[in-house]
Image (cartoon, rainbow, N blue to C red; front, side, top):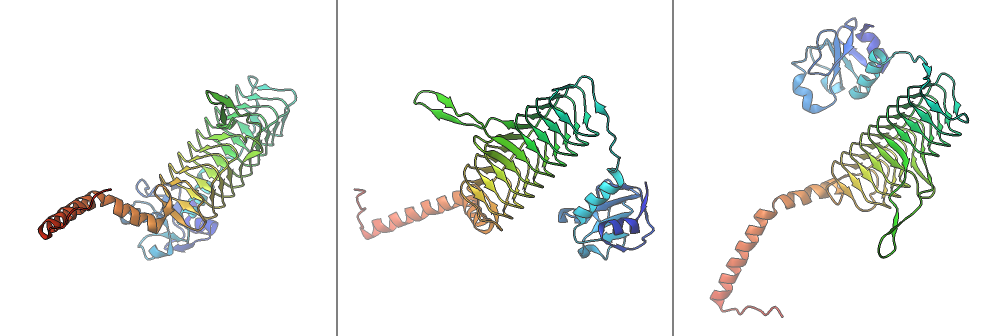
Length: 350
């Protein structure tokens, strides 16, 4: 359904620059947009493409309000883009499809109103499935689990016994929730398995990407709090706690009993040791290694993770190490030559 630029601006709380009657029929990237599309600019590296895009309108920050093109000007173009995509392209109404006859559901399970259970789903004993929840084919949900309302479980997800999941949670394909944590006690020759008898709790509005692994608590619980977002291939060890609205990007690994604060960002391939704490609003950049507690409200880089300013200086020094080594060798040779000239005896190493 087509919308005018003025309608879209009102929807996102932005301001129109140019013709508010401009008709928008689609949303597209800045490189691929054509007539009738709206696009956005949030990353400065794409700024040079503003003059080249064929889009009918652009969502921009106030910095670009003087462009000679129909605009929606707002403080957060990326958020406005997401809201417009939701309005125009992601508004198919939910239609319950019921329970497929090939699904295997325990008689003691409770299935909510208008839930959809696709083919070959397995649901264990005493498990509760909330209203309007959708479970796609070949997913397994064990005994004594609880899934809230409006949950979406994509294909091939495994949810182990005792897992508790809140409302409006999305879990993507091939994710495993509630498997055993990595706990083994050495007896001097081999390893004795430490029973993993805790649970996993996932609160409302959490999103888990494809291929995540969330271990259950050894004792107590592994906890992902409200609004947290995990990208694909994120691994959480037993008894990890992720606080509200934190973001873990692809291939992050978090060892057991670590606590991550609110609004924390762990970028791609960050590794976190066990039993550490990361404070609220911390940002740990890609491939950093966290080996000790990190205070909040700071940006960290490198391994071991350091505050960005210090880390950048260390990296600059590390890059110059080969050159520095040659300089030191040259200086040592010159000192040795001067000592020889002056008749200075070399001190014994003993």
